[in-house]
Image 1 (tube, helix red, strand yellow):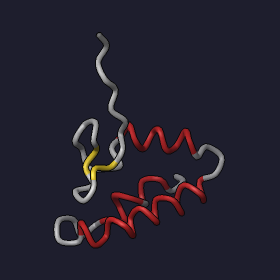
Image 2 (cartoon, one colour):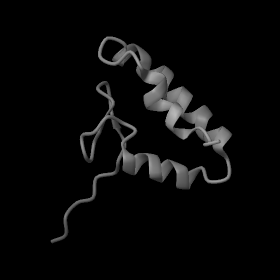
Image 3 (cartoon, rainbow, N blue to C red):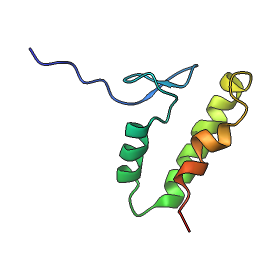
Image 4 (cartoon, one colour):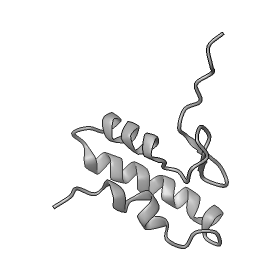
Length: 78
């Protein structure tokens, strides 16, 4: 039997990746999101901002730098 593939999605309320356990969005999730939102970076940033707002209350005491984790990495490079 093949190994069950677990998608790289957030595990709430810890906001860790269900697949690899890294802080979400993990590298595989970031790559997947960049592919999914290719050509529409604004929509990606809106989606991530919504998730960040959802996670804010859950993670505020654990990780005060949510902007970097959820948004800063997805901005276009100059």
